[in-house]
Length: 485
Image 1: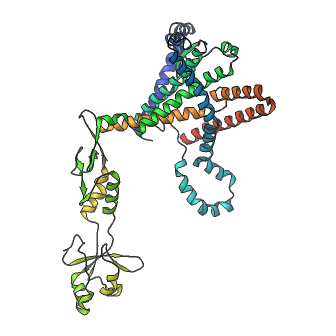
Image 2: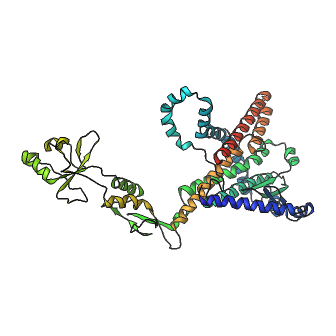
Image 3: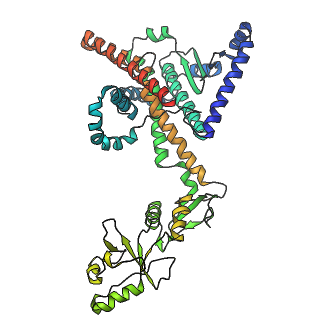
């Protein structure tokens, strides 16, 4: 845990401590006045605000009484499409959330701990080693401000939650308004660290409506809002809207930041075009070049006088085309070779293996007087330590007041927005009361029973899915607590 999440967690604790201290000093009469005048309700770890102005605005929209006929057609297709998309997503989302839970590494380790015997653990370890390496991406991630999220990521998290929750509840409200159902309240609530939105629809008017399709539209409108957010966020991840303020660099990479703890001789906004005469056109070129340069050149240097002795004792046709590559010694007197553990001498780089036989070099002829260890060079140290301490990009800002960090911050925000939207769809689609998925399954069951007369079978399926959803939610809560603490 770094410093930023720890500070954020302490800010939450201090805030709620002071809040509950003030709340305990307020009389019940004063709290009633707060609710009457401002719609404010103070809970132990929650603050609820019922906004009457937004409620009146939604009730006065009159989606079913539009002046323009084409708007009525658009609304009709939109809410009908929300039902189709939501019910298509229902089985897939239920499958994915179940799969992601039971294929998580934490669940696998938990099962292995309780189900594996000591005799099988050792034998299965080597066989499952590759599977464990392949499942490194199945880590269970918990997004909790102050514990697992840094200060900057927590800001993206809060904004994404606010947008997804607000548009989700507005979708329910607009769908209810379209079917002439006025909402009771529309408000906001802050639960410890989660800013959420809520809407209250009168159940009497909802149940009086005998049109099952209308009820489905009201229930599924929230999913449609989150689905649209996912599409918009995904589009903005692929094509960053900030890219209109940047241009692409044809040759080289722009340095966006330099680690000041290491003196590199490079500055921010410098452009790297070549490294050791190797053209650098993208980040992959940079990584490959650094990897080749920073390899530790283990080996030995053989004195030139020793080579002369070998040359004089052999024919001129067997002379070797050696490469001068040893640093730290006179390059005219020392030549470089790679030394293998199998006690085989292989010449470095461009020297082909066919020269080995011609040169007649073997390890018995080498002695301490003519063999020197090849150390890592200063240039290798530079490329190995200094160049990885910089950040580069192919994007160059058109205006000086726009930083490259702003480009990546926008991309990070849309990634959070996409993740929160997907998560809200998957969890809210679970058929567990009071989630929307439970109402969706109930309406679908009622529709099938009235249409095809399969009462007992679908009621049993309804209960099984409800039980399965309860198990999934319990396991996610348990794993979240286990992962954090």
